[in-house]
Image (cartoon, rainbow, N blue to C red; front, side, top):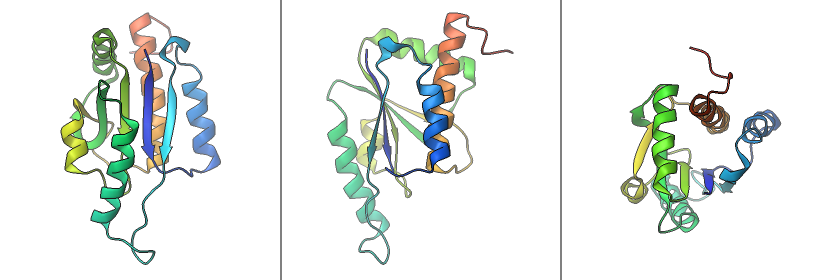
Length: 157
């Protein structure tokens, strides 16, 4: 089993990397959890529109996904779940046997092709969040889902 987070936006502040590493290092080693970052495509004065940027980022995201991956798009328009609900979903995805690829799109979102490729669309919040904060929040919630599933005392109701 391999779980990957594919995120558009290679450079993040140091606090993001530190917090992300704190939670991702707690995840079970058998998940082989990795972060794959993709560059943000140029927009505005530097030569491109939002649509052009989304198209360029689409190519990178699709290239990072394997054909048999189970894909979960992290998007504010997705389905909202509580931590316990996410733990149940995660157990189902892990039981499926396929590798998991979670996606964080670029500053203008993702293309329709990415939405169609996703098996599930998950909202961490209805609020628009900075991409670095989404990485940290996702890693923490993934760890929390594992803790709930295994009876680890990290999660308290």
